[in-house]
Length: 141
Image (cartoon, rainbow, N blue to C red; front, side, top):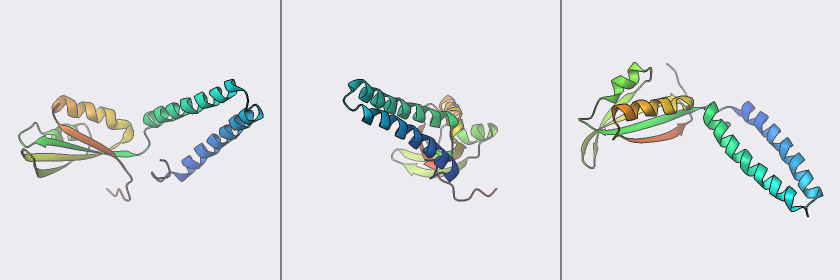
């Protein structure tokens, strides 16, 4: 993920540490391949590392997310609320299945995602929200 977010040096450093740990762990398991405790320990360590890595990625919050919020046209205006909290928002008027809608686009740092979601849910709990990772090419202001 770090490579796709244009952070190749961070990715290489993590890969270096990860591969060193992998080599040490696998060499111990291979030396005693008949020992089910070592095999189970390696498998459990791998699973724990996956969970920990996922958690750390969420805490560190590298990169950006785009949040798209869909609301009926007559709903509370989210743009001003989000802007008052320091977030840039683009508003698009559109047509949905049940009539006119407003679509709010907001690009935020991944670490701010929970905060922004709370703001949206507080001001419009029935909004339909999607998120996706962003790999910006240019962010000229």
